[in-house]
Amino acid sequence: MDMMTMNLSQFKECQKTINTVLIPIGMIEAHGPHCALGTDVLIPREFVGRLNDVLDKKILMAPEITYGHSWGLAPFAGTIDVSSEVFINYVFEICKGFQQNGFKNIILFNGHGGNISSLDIVTEKLADLEVSTLTINWFIDYREDIKQIAPHPGHAGEDETSLILAINKNYAYTSGVGSHETPIQKRFRFKDGGKTLYPEAFSGNAEAATVEKGEQLFHMLTTLIVEDIETFWELEQIQGGRIDDITVDA
Image 1 (cartoon, rainbow, N blue to C red):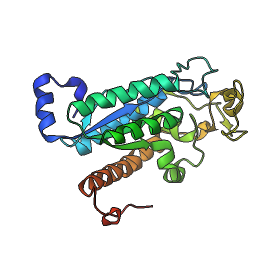
Image 2 (cartoon, rainbow, N blue to C red; image 1 turned 180 degrees about the vertical axis):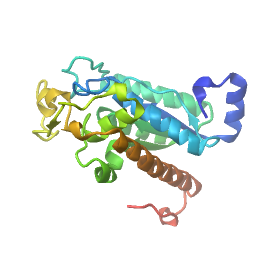
Image 3 (cartoon, helix red, strand yellow; image 1 turned 90 degrees about the vertical axis):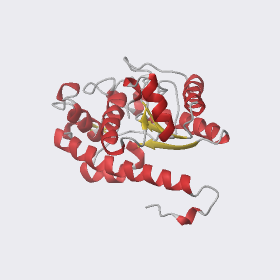
């Protein structure tokens, strides 16, 4: 159910039957010379539409949070970086607002790697308020599955570029883009290190991306994400009980 287009009466009806809200979270930043700056927003937005087709009447789909934290890509033009402190407080306050509206389950659908550590803090704070959360970082949580279709994923790599092409061919291109491997581990930090970590603001084999791979990824990942959401609801049913009462695939 799409919150953005609801009126007040519809929202009140939604509150009676739905206790789970999904908040898409992205970033506006450089994605190589070839992908849209809004890649990390466009991909979660597309997933929301597909998930809504499957889970309508079960989840409130909230408007997206467009800006996030990106220390690594901050040196590149087009990156609009929000400090981690501000980002944490902003997302937490949004989630607290949903809690005050009766939503006890919150799914944070994240499309940007730089947000992950901040969202971990947000979910800990929400847990202390007795709000249950599920964070979905699709590019990490399902990385091995992704490699079956796009063997060289990365930041604006084969996987992300394929997904963007599947959304709209005008939002990305592949001709002459090439491939970049990350030359150092992310645990090394130094001034403007992102320019070394992400040559030309991307990693992975972007040139291998195709529309067909993007469609395959959307289909596969939507199924896997639905399974994780259903597990989230199963956990809700047994809170205070035994965790081994449910089966979670490794």
